[in-house]
Length: 82
Image (cartoon, rainbow, N blue to C red):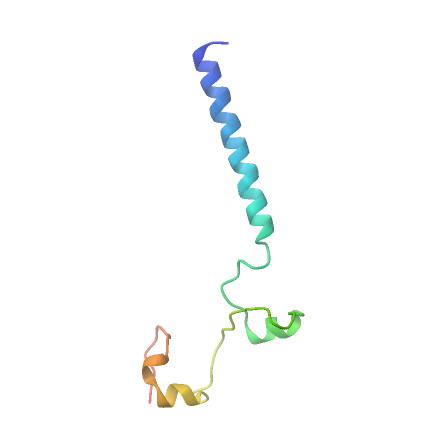
């Protein structure tokens, strides 16, 4: 085997191992890679009590009492109308 063939075999096997590792990681994170769940998605899933999840979605105007008392607590990228 020449040096060029050995180098090609080493690089291709390293890429194959890296591909398998990436596939296993993505398969493990298959359901938990979502940034947040909407209220309907959360109701459809049977989430065990004590599991930490992020809930997101639309909030009706003036529905949150914390937004009225602490305007700095909003992490919304859009400005809040008071």
